Image (cartoon, rainbow, N blue to C red; front, side, top):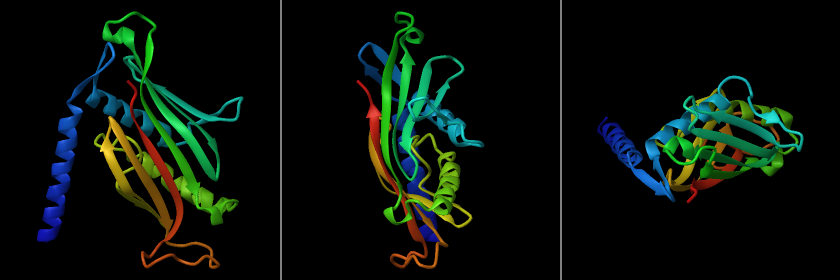
Length: 212
């Protein structure tokens, strides 16, 4: 019990520390950006993208794209990716300089995240595994938090799927990390790795931060 209390206390301290950082106002050229406002917008955009039905549309050039704008018209979010079993993409946030009392129609790219990953090589072509991964991944990404508004939470489980962030460094200004997923059940001809009680099936690396 003492250990659990200590772990929760440390987690609370980390979250409070992140919130203190979020209060920071940073200068991007002639723009002033409230980091908490940016983080809150990223949470709204990602929850809209991954909650419910797939909102990423297929474009004429073969990319999957999702766009989102806040109600005030201050921020614009876009997520473009290519690929299915293995995929890569970029999430970008633009800010309307006019909303910051600068000339009208001047949109500036202020934040970006690049990502690449997918199912592990032995599962490429396995539609059932890919569908299971996508289902768990979408639910995990919809659990995004304002403390780490990049991908999913540190840990999430749904049915036979287990999602986690084993590696993460940085904050909203500059960060990098890895997300992974395992299933507790996979085809019999696949051997379990290690003694974790799950079968690794997916891994993705991401990095990004403010654009100055």
